[in-house]
Image: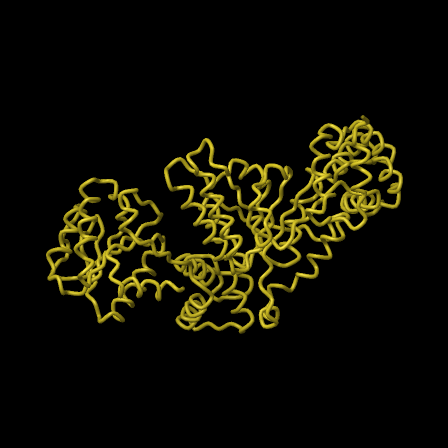
Length: 506
C-alpha cells in the first residue's frame, strides 16, 4: 500500500493522531497537502517550536515555543471544521506528562470530528502511554517513479538532455537517496561541468555512501572480487550463475520471483565472505554490509526502530546484496534471556522481513557455528538455499594456490609446484593457504630473493590449521552437513572421509 493511499485511508477513518517518522519533511508535507485537497480541501495548519503556526494568516506565530498551546488550537476551531494539523519535531515533547495527557484527551474527542494531528519526526520514538493512540504511517524514500520526473524537471530547467538509457541508469543509481540529496548531488554535477552524463554516477554513488555512513547501521562495500577469485566451490558457483539473471524484467515476465538469498554455513576462512563480495560484483549490484551489533541501542524501542530503518534503506537501494557476516554471533541470544527481549524482538522483525519481502534484496548471511543459529532462521522460505562450505579438497587447494599466485606472481606462476603444495596442505582453509603464501614471501624477502615452492612448504610446516586446533567444533559442523541438512558448496567433497578421520577410537 502506497503512502498516499494509506494516509488518505487514515483521514477517512478519522484516525486522530498520526505519527510519520521521516527526514524528508518538505516532501511529506507536500504529500499531506495533496491529501488535504483530495479530502474536501481541508484546512492545513503547520506548527514548529521556533515559529509557531505558519501558513494560516489568522494564526501566524501562534504557540511559539509552546507545544501545549499548539494543541489548544485544535480545540478552539469549530468541531465540524475539517482540518489537518502538522506538528514538526513533536516527538521531542511526548515525554512531558502534560503533553501526553493532552494528546490522549484529544484522541478521544477527535474520533467524532474531521480533524487529524500529524506528528512529523526524524525518528520513531513513542512513549508506552501513547502507543495505543498513535498510528504510525511510514513514508518511504523516493521510488523510481518519483525520481525520474524530478531529474527530467531539473534537466528541462537547465536546457539539458540525456539519452534514454543513460537517464534510466541515473534514475536507478539515485534510488535510496532522499529527494533533497538527489537535488543536491545533481546540482553539484551540473555546477561541475554544466551537464548530466554517465560520469556523474560516481558522484551519486559517493553521496549514497555518505548517506549510508550517516545511518551508522549499514556499510557500502566496494566489491572488486569476481567469481574467478573463488577457488573451488563449484556447486555454489553453478547455483549463482544460474540465478544471475533473476533480477531482470524478463524473469518477472516469465513469472519468476526475485532471488531471496543464501545462508553460507561452514568453517572459518573457507571463502564465505569472499563469496558475498563476488556475488555483488558478478551481478553488478551494490553491496551493503550489516553489522547487526549496530542495531542494538540503549533506549527502549530504539533497536526495533533501527531494524526498520535498515530494512527501509536496503529496500530503497534494491536491487542490492545485503551481506550479514557471522549472523550466528549476532542472534545467539534470540531467546530473549538477559536483555528484556530486545534481541528476540529484533530477530523476529528480521526473520519476518526475510520471509515476506518482495523487494529484490538478495541477503547473503554467513555463519560458523550452526548450533548457535535459531531454528527459525533455517526454515525454508527465509533463504533460497543453505550451502555448507567445507574445507577444500586437494583440487580446490590447487585452485586456491593458483588464484593467489596469479595475483602475486602472474609472470612466474609456472615456477611453483601447485600439485606439491596442494598435497602438503590437508585440512588447510583458503585463509590459511593465503597466510602460508604471505609467510613464504617474508622468507624470500628477508633473503633478498623471490619466494619459491620450498619457502611455501616451509611456511606450511609452521602453520597449525584450525581443523586441528578446533577439531571438535569442526567435526560437529562436518557431521551436520553430512546429515543432509545443507547443500554442499563443493562438487567433489571429501566430507565423509574427513569425519572418519576426525573420529576418535573407542
